[in-house]
Length: 230
Image (cartoon, rainbow, N blue to C red; front, side):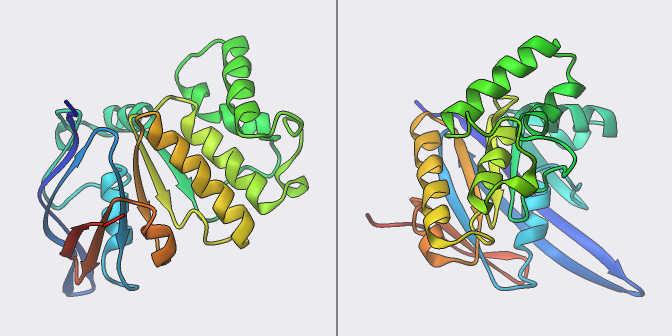
C-alpha cells in the first residue's frame, strides 16, 4: 500500500508589498502519495511558483504545516532544512541551472559535495546515472558544448544523484524543442515507473496531461484537483 509522502496542511504564504499584503498561497491543503505523478497549472500570478517553492522547501510558509515523510519541516532550523531538502528533494528547472565552468560529470556531483560522499563514490554514482540517461560519451563536455536536451538530462542526473524521495520539475520542457521535450517526458515516465514521486509545474497542457492528476491554481487557491482519464 502506498504511503503519504507529502502533506500540506492549511498552508498560506503572505508577501508584503509596501503596506499591502499579498496572499500568494491561500490556505492550501494538499496530499501527495508515494510514487504519484501530478502536474500543477495556473496562469501567471496564480501562486503556482510560490507553491512550488514551498513544496521544495525553498521558502517557508507564513502559516500552516508542510510534512515530508511525516517530518514537520516547519519545525526545522535553516541548517536542518537545507540538509533535509538536499536529501529528500531533487529539482529540475526550465533554465537547467548548470554551472558553466563545470563539466556534465562535475555538475552532476555538486549535490554530493555537501554530504561527505567519498570522491570515488561520487564519480561512480554520477557516471552511472549519466550513462543511463544517454550521456556516457558527454561526461567531460561543458554545458556550452551540449544541446538543450542534453543539458536538461544533466540537470535530471543532478536531481537524481542523492536518490531523492520527491522530484520537482519547473517547466522542464519550456526551453526545449519538441523532440527533446518528448525525450525528457519519456525519462519522467521511466522514473515514475520506478516509484519516484514527480510533481511538474507547467503551462503546457500536453505536458500536464502526462500526469494522472492535474491541479489548477488560481488566486493562490486550488481551483480544481482532477484525475485524468486515460
